[in-house]
Length: 96
Image (cartoon, helix red, strand yellow):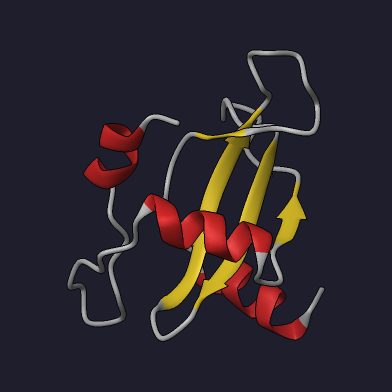
């Protein structure tokens, strides 16, 4: 996991302030949360999937996931971190 890259792109809240979301939060949302996975709409992304997940008391995050370098398809690499766009956030909250 490229921790410096993830921390370089902290998401912002509705007021535009940066929110401290860490690797632990991403892992918690992946393991214990209720993440949703979507194919990215933009073919230019290096990601195979986009994970949307709610980080309690923070916001819905968007995490692009790349295929594993190891070839083990049960693992993936988060390659970014951002606040979910409005449309994606609404889709996630509606359970679509």
